[in-house]
Amino acid sequence: MRTWRLLDLPPLTAAENMALDEVLLELKGEGADVPNTLRFLQFSPRAVLVGFHQSVAEEVRVSYCRANGIDINRRITGGGGLLFDESQIGWEIICDKAFFDLVVPTDRLFRELCRPVVAALRAMGIDARFRPRNDIEVAGRKLSGTGGTDHEGAFLFQGTLLTDFDVETMLKSLRIPVEKLKAKEVDSVKKRVTCLAWELGRAPEPAAVKAALARAFARHLGVRLEPAGLTPEEKRLLAERLPYFRSKEWIDLVNPKYEKTEVVQAAYKSPNGLARCTLAVNLPRKVLKNVFITGDFLSFPSRALFDLEAALRGLPLNADILCGVIRGFFDDGRIAIPGMEAEDLCKPIRQALEKAAIARHGIPLEYCNQISLTNGSFDEVIAHKPSALLLPYCSKLKDCDLRFSKDCRACGQCTVGQAWAMGQERNMRNVCVTSFEDLLNELAALRRDGAKAFIGCCCQPFFTKHVDDFAKAGLPGILVNIDDTTCYDLSQEDEAHQGSFASQTHLNLGLLAAVLDAARA
Figure (cartoon, rainbow, N blue to C red):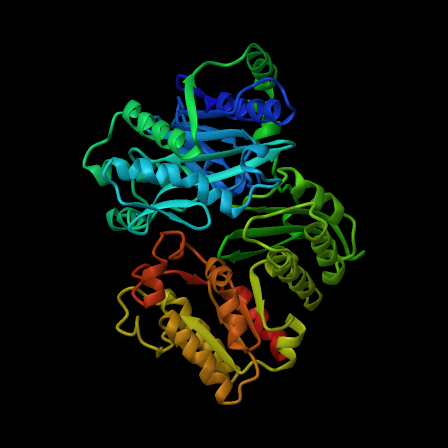
């Protein structure tokens, strides 16, 4: 029976834990005399960690974290942002690829390495299950998230196990607007996430959790685990790398710096992850100055995404050219994103380019970024003479007797009423959409009635989530972003989907008027 090292160090800082991840993986990947390892990790002080491909500025409430003694750092693995407090336990496998007879980590390997964790949790009395692509859940609620990366001949696969869960601190640490959060909003998070303390009625001792995990991994991998510390070479390299992992250079490694007036951004959410593309453009020369591809996905090798961004810089603002480069990276095996294909990056690239093209209508580029398009470019949509204006019920007054109605008196007391008046002035068919199902029905009805295009208002997270649903509806449309805190900011998209969102948003009337005027010109 082969022997692996069980590495269980005292709690470390975020920088120490992240630097050690790189050291362990790098030495193993380059063939150094270090053992395959099962590592447990804990943090002190608590820390917010962004995924390797994420931007701290986009994902973290930096001022809150600094004021409350919460470290901020970056993982060497992909995935989404998370709060890792002192109660949580992390587990990692650092191993030769040859042990599992693989070249690049795959979805199959993710499933295999989650099985020991599922077995350990079931031994503790928790009915845990694996949920593709890389989560462990209990009755639909996430208990553990996982991710991985590789380096030459080795890979690292890691996961977190929520022992206890501080919902409010998590919401305030990550970039989620919380100015309107109430107890029911906090409770809604518990529908999606759980922890050992909630499932067992008590927070188990970390030593007991680690012992259960170690037994399950040893049994599943067919190895003997022997406790041991770091080798002299690991200690030396850790001391050498630690200053970099404490530096702003590492923490802000992904940092989409741009002038607001020359950037466009779009996102696409596939079943396996969200990809956000930020393009800094030179419109007079029609050249892509810079590009940042960020999101909560995993990619291999870890730096392949940076190579792809470098290959795109300086190219013409042409979707066929840019997407051709992206497809080439995927086809040649220069990048692999489990569960995602080249088209999952090409979609937000095309959406962003379509936004940039709107500027020729005299709309400033920073406002073009607040516009989304479906089933055609801006020019193509307005050429169809949009005849319908779709408005969301969530922008009506909360106490309006028509709040959940499809009608509006256009009394002017809310932005829906003012937008309704704009539509009437332009002889458009005004429709107040009251739920997601109602939206699909209205789009189908408009097509049956001969409408060729529409203009509407919705928040960008809603469009990102339902971009494929809009495309399937088949009706060309222009969608203007909603201002203010939305159902997605408050984790109440289920309520909004069903037509029962209780908060009020506000329409961007100035931008809506500009779009309506462009369509009428």
